[in-house]
Image 1 (cartoon, rainbow, N blue to C red):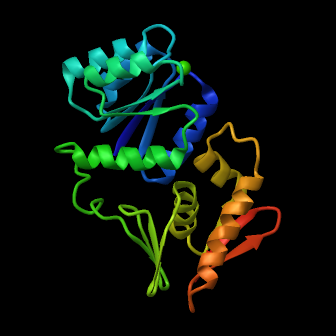
Image 2: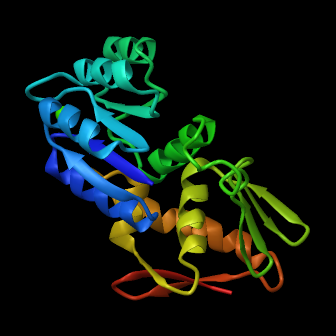
Length: 226
Ligand code: CA
């Protein structure tokens, strides 16, 4: 799967490139509107992430050009004060939008959803019901639920995203910075909120016998051990 990231802020480009490559995408980036149109025609991406405020050619103009050629899924990434542009983008055929600062995991979820809906992207089927299982813990992204044997927890969104990251990387260390960048956005300022989310998840996991445990790896991050 190829993703085209159209974004003029290098920090966002870097974070998105890393995150999408980790998910198995082949990522390319365009830093302005003109480059976006050229890259789109050259690379025929399977999905486009499109910032609206761009140099050279606006995101809306890029979207018009894309839609004159293709029905590829397009997710618009916009600043908070650009609501009318978002409405226009949706009218022009954008599939979804997120407002900055957004979380990369939220964006990944939207991307998978958009690709499921799109015909002919090859992403249907196995992406349909992406539950994660570690030991007796089952994470259900359709219901935002964590099941531990007979216990069922409805997780708040951010808690779900933390658990999703830890379960995806089971047995491996997930750095704190990565969790903060991906879940609270690259502009996060207070890392204590992550500690609170880890604490709440641990309390849930402790209620079930044989549930995986979240280990703290000092100075680095966390690891989920079955
Ligand atoms: Ca921008």
